[in-house]
Length: 260
Ligand SMILES: NC(=O)c1ccc[n+]([C@@H]2O[C@H](COP(=O)([O-])OP(=O)(O)OC[C@H]3O[C@@H](n4cnc5c(N)ncnc54)[C@H](OP(=O)(O)O)[C@@H]3O)[C@@H](O)[C@H]2O)c1
Image 1 (tube, rainbow, N blue to C red):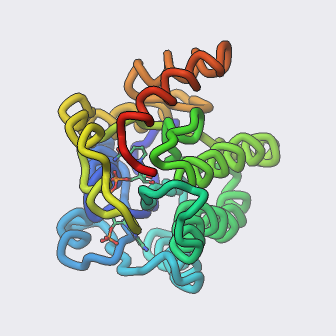
Image 2: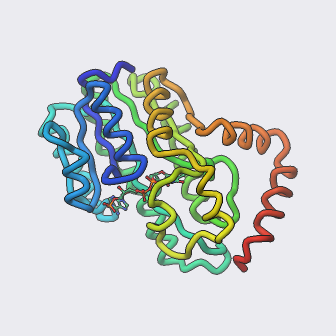
């Protein structure tokens, strides 16, 4: 897809990966609409020509409003980037269910509902693209994050099914599965905190700009799934071929995290 003059709606774009994507899309000549709850940061990301949509995506009405405001302002919507998401550090067998429901509401149901609002516009226009930001945790289980990975597996499943459902409409669907990215994500979790060992691994994480580059390049070449960085691709491949070997490695890491 050529991004020049395309209208791109990005959720969770006040900081982190979403904000880096917004900046890169603008450099490619796209018109951007950005959604999040923090007014100042969002307006600064939107810039002069962009549209800042202040919304809490936990509220279903805000999802309809975000799509409508974009179409009202720019007359169309070419790409929807479902990026807003939140994590939770807790063993799944004793995690607070209310928090898990809230996480699924943002990580899965907001994604699905944004798609349901955007697709009729894309069908009318004769095409478009949907990009869902999942995680490497949507391809392999991360035991310090089990419920989060469940929500991201759901996003990958949705993206793969939707790609087939919409293929005749000229709407492309792509999942993005980043590994560790240096953003506020680990601080912005619904509950819990990253074990020290994982927090220290932060220095090996990629930047949000590197993640955004991979996303934008994937969209330009109509990729199905983007896994970034390359180590994540190797891990996903290893899990597909020899899951019990990867399980064993994850078990030994988990054993050192003191999360019981
Ligand atoms: N960072 C990582 O290591 C990593 C790895 C794999 C996948 N991911 C995924 O990448 C995506 C972006 O994560 P990030 O690292 O950029 O996280 P982040 O820095 O915490 O940014 C999250 C963004 O989502 C917005 N947001 C959160 N709750 C919202 C709500 N209820 N309504 C509207 N907007 C909301 C936040 O803005 P406001 O607070 O202003 O609303 C912010 O702009 C997420 O889906 C995450 O699961 C991240």
